[in-house]
Amino acid sequence: MGAYLAPKPSAQRQYALLKLRNPGGTGHVQNGRITWRWSVQPTPVSRVYQARLACDSRGRPEIFIESPNLGLLSGSRRIPHLYDQDKVRLCLYLPGTGEWTTSKVLADTVVPWTSLWLLFFEEWLWSDEWKGGGIHPPIDERKKEDIK
Image (cartoon, rainbow, N blue to C red; front, side, top):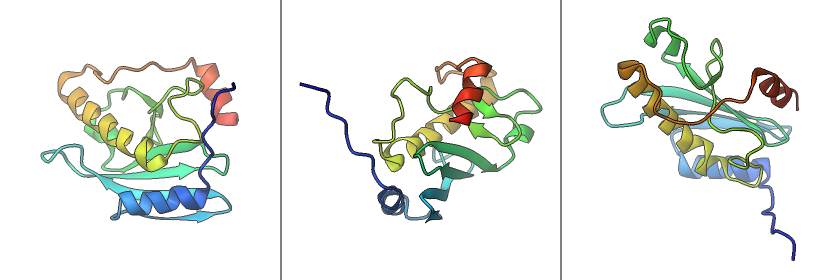
């Protein structure tokens, strides 16, 4: 018997679940592409961040922190676990490992992972040690993933 593959939720279903589980957020779906913006506060004593999810028509999510400016908060230190320092694109999962697949729900994965990433970021600001674990693919692998 073959492995069961969960069906890929449509962009409209993903968007409906984002609205249901994150009622303060805003966004839209256009040509199968989802854009979602929401406020994230990792703990009650944390600052509030503005995040943006962009998910292409193939279901690949990218998460950006739009404010506050993490580069300024870092004091010009290179921030760990970002795919792009300038655009502040978070590294939330390792592509090709199954941590993220298009059958998963954005509201249940990358949205809470964003809060967790920000919690580790805040701790890193204080300790200068990234305690969130994870690994980065080699630069060449990241470029291939971005092209897919």
